[in-house]
Length: 319
Image (cartoon, rainbow, N blue to C red; front, top):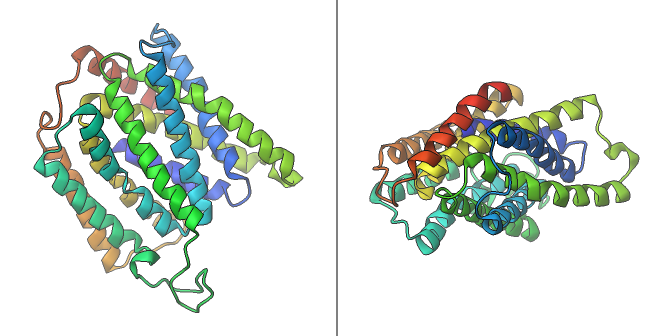
C-alpha cells in the first residue's frame, strides 16, 4: 500500500515536470537516481551486484525500462483518465503471464478482487472511450463531446501495461535466487544508459529551454527518490506474495492519485468516482485477505528476510 502511495506521488511529479520538459528527463531522473541509491544499498549489504541470474536480471531491467517509456509517453498523447485506465489493466496480464510462465494458480478471491478493482478504476477515471462525456472542449473539437484518442497513445498505454506485467512476473521468478536489492539495482543498471541516450537525442533536437531550472531539478530528484522507495517495497511484496495478488492491491495507487489531485490540483470527486473508490478499496482488501499460498509455492525465507531488512533500512532515509 505504501508503494502505491509513492507511485502516485511520482506520477504527480512527472505530471508537473512534463509541463515544461521532455518526457526523457523524467525517465532519466528516475533511472539515474535509482542507480545511485540501489548501488549504495547493494554495497551496504555486502552483496555482489552481478547477482545469480544476470541474464534474467538484464531481461527484467529491459522490460521494466520499456514499460516506463511506454507509460510516460502515453501520458503525453492521451487524456489522463484514458491513459490510466488502460495502464491499470496490467493485473489481468500479470495473472495470465504468471499462469503461463510460473504456473501460479489464481485463486477465486484474487480473480474477484481484480475484477472489482478494475470496475472501480473505470468508475473513478471515467474514460472517454467507454462513453463517459467530459466537460469542456474535447480533442475532437466538440463543445462537450468525447475526445478522439490517439491510436499511438492507446497502443503505448496497452503495451506499457503488458510490459509491466512481464516485469512483475520476472521479479517473481527471481525471488529464490537473487536478493531484492540486486533485482532493483539491475533495473536501474539497464535503464540508465538507455535513458541517457534518449535524453541526449531530445537535447540535440529540442529548444534551449529544455534544460531544467531549480524547481524542475527538485521535482526530478523527488521522482527518483519516490520511485526507488516504491520499487523496493513492490519488489519485497513480489518476493513474498503471488504476482496477481500484489498487482490487485496496486490499484490503491488510483485512490491516492485522486486524493493528491484534490489537494494539489483542485480536482473534485463526484459520486461515481466515490463509488469507484469504494470498489477499489474493497478489491484491495479482498486480495489482502486471500490465502498466501493459493497461487504459488512458498517463498524462500532467507530472501524474504533480506527483502524486509532492505525496506526497514532504506525507507526512512528515502523519505
